[in-house]
Length: 224
Image (cartoon, rainbow, N blue to C red):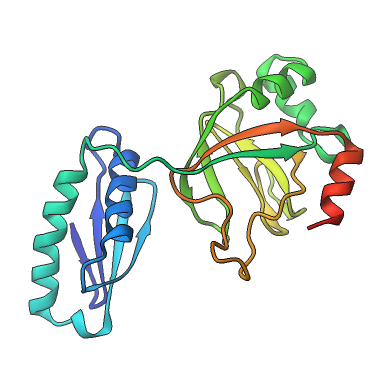
């Protein structure tokens, strides 16, 4: 545990069994029952940064917060987080929307059809929300599909692009630069600040992908 300046405390689970699980447990408890000093818990892959309220940034308050957070962090190790939401998200794997599908097939030794089938059959867990609002880093990619990032990132990745690298897959909520392999595109709006829950996929949610045609994609995209 590290005090980061006057306004944050960082809990690092590196080295414990399943650090991301402990991270999600602690984050969930702080979200469900936030202590008075906690303005916001921010989850990383294996860390939770607790942003302190303005009136809790004295040395005395930070010491008390560290004591309680240590107890909460210890209890989080080996515990199970509450079940997240489950999503079935439509994706079009057509080559017109999957510029790196053949690259993934070549690197994995599979056909393009096998890549699609293998990816679509997976169940994915949102282990981190970051990079841009609504971008969920999801684990669960079949090891047969574990491929490296592109040698050079694209300056612009279209919004809704389904991407993967290593053991992770993700959907770009907005148009941004990116270096992951693009194997499809999703017509669903993943982040909308006007919604009560702006990010469709939250930490700990489970995601499956459903293959759709280009025509279905176009109809759903028009309704965004």
